[in-house]
Length: 436
Ligand code: FAD
Image (cartoon, rainbow, N blue to C red; front, side):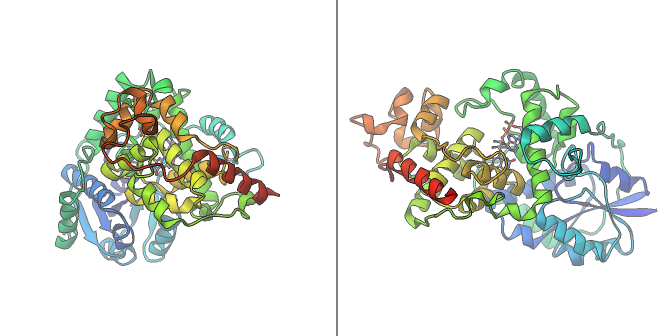
């Protein structure tokens, strides 16, 4: 027999149950489709990251690469054969797969998650609303052991579309900055290095943007270059790190149950909230020129590397929503355009958490102070100086408060665009009246 394995967010050979299901049927055509709906909306770094990982997969197995709407391309390549996939659970992915399934027999095995979104439920069969309860039930639910792929899988080379290959190669060449090494071997190297050197101190080091204390696996996890189940099988599942993996699973579960929460408030409590649309201030936020060093460092790390430390994602998101009073989707959109780990479930619910509209919303009166946060989590100012060269003459933590130094602005660093104390008060008043 013969079947098709259509790769999407599962760009790996190891521990890939969908690929195994396809191989069980005999010879496999391994297919990747450059989908214009995803491709043309992604920023240059995201395209480069995706392309590099598709090409890395093509070096491991014979990969047939096409360009076009999957609803046309997949049935044509399948030519009556069954098509295997790893289940996609985002709103776009579900719509696309439903449409493709009208034309071919689509068999979904596994998903980009240890436990498929929608599976962890409480005693009455309802989804969990808060993280801690979800995480407990998620651990109890458990997941299968990693699956072993045969050494030389029976995969045949099909005809690739020249234009699709060129497009991928061009995207890699056009990468706006250096990206992490692509491919599953690189992902595994990264994991093992972190497991051996970083995992033990992760609970305290993870909050330090000036240190390299997190795994940096998010871009690989996002594209399924490495699977969370493979990681969980290689660590203590009661660890802080496993708990972070559980957050990723939780947000995917929330999105599965409420697809509208991708771009709308999950909780209606703040429906009456008044928002602003200050074009200049939003632009200052995007370009890292707000005059608040930790905010600017984070926004520039995003612009110039396609990634941002978690603590700083929270600080910069709080600044946009609470100091500039901008509705969270504006910020979520910007992050998604630039992050190489940009993921609609984790990103948009992360934004909702900060904005106070999501699950486990941080209490609405919690407004991050960008200066004290900066000094607390980047105590020597190293992170700020790394990303904001206009402050590199200010030693130690003084880089967080250029306004306190006689020479603070001598390299043309911008003045603060708002007064944090005033905007904090304003945010609290708006929240209060939205809730009245
Ligand atoms: P580690 O600390 O090493 O964590 C390991 C893994 O756990 C991560 O790779 C990630 O898959 C998962 N994880 C950790 N923290 C979270 C979290 N809070 N929510 C969900 N999963 C988590 N993560 C994304 O993968 N994509 C996004 O688009 C994204 N956008 C975010 C936007 C905002 C406003 C906030 C506050 C958080 C966002 N996160 C997002 C979560 C988190 O910031 C990143 O997962 C993390 O910084 C990735 O770096 P790492 O791999 O070194 O993380």
